[in-house]
Image (cartoon, rainbow, N blue to C red; front, side, top):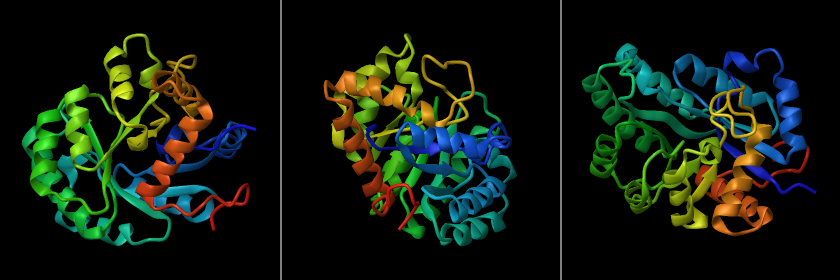
Length: 267
């Protein structure tokens, strides 16, 4: 029997899943991935995530606006997000953050909205899902200045080093590990996984992106989570069952998920 896993960050509403979502979910369950957190990246995506969570067993939603879309945020969007955050099945606020890799939105615009989004996220009482790409110091400065975070949070798709991991842990946040950890070039991320306590790690696909080896370059999907989890178990020198049990308990704790009903959805 496969150990139970939770995909803590996926984008089931995105177009690459539109033609075969039922099969994607069936394959996930076949690999022991019985719960998935589907993450909003703008208002439309957040609404779709909420809809999916309302009708798909084992699927939960988060709502947020990705830094790529910061330049298009209007004041009324904050109230829309606040309303969506109170909908059934919503378990987190995000993803929000900073992305200075390609600067789809100007840095100063991203910074201004990230502060406001962090503050709104705290007001909702939901855990924060943080996106950080090439903006480690700026992300951490804002998070450290606006804490504490009673509901906690997670640095998704963690891409920093041990020192950044320590700062994230000091906030009381979790670190979520993507399929990148299976790449030959990911020595720093593997060091981070060894360093971070098992009770502070989550595992994610970030699907449809970042498929792990041996599917690198293809569409990612929750069924592939087992390859990331297996690599993490090897790095932590624990069994796959222990890794799965720990990351599942961590995700349940962070997102306040009820126990899984075992094949029949939520309860």
